[in-house]
Image (tube, rainbow, N blue to C red; front, side, top):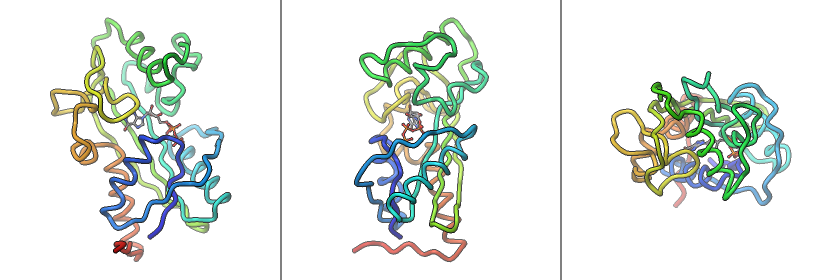
Length: 206
Ligand code: ITT
């Protein structure tokens, strides 16, 4: 099955390909990145908005991922605002320097300074939209927020997230290890099972 990956995030795109291609999907990149207003109030709504917008533009079965970091002691923030947390009017804004990712991490570490409860989870909601049907699946990865960055792998908040049962950060895992335990890996494998249950058989490309 050929699916268009509705994302502007290179880290996500790499992972979607890495997880879905061995499951028999051909993942194609959009010719153009779209600016989709993520006006939903949940990961599911935002994933659906992205999937529909890309489908409308390119006319291909589309997969979208809306994901983020849910932090217990911050009432679930940054949550659906994870990619733009630095600019959110919650706990003071940060300048996006040297990058939005660095500013997001800096803000989160600042807000958690001296806070004992560091519990958090990554959540991903993936939606596959075929033009007449939308299917979704969710995945979670529990862990805690470290005091400082560790590791160079992955993307986004990975260097400050320690998954449950591991010593280091998500950014210190190999790509295969991350995919095995990650919110995205779990959500995409669930989606693939759901599709199988509906009789879609992805063809392995030669
Ligand atoms: P698209 O909407 O174009 O897919 P985005 O980066 O804006 O790209 P989201 O709105 O879903 O995507 O925001 C997700 C943010 O959550 C992302 O920018 C990261 O900061 C963070 N995030 C999600 N999954 C992550 C992961 O596996 N590792 C680290 N950070 C992650």
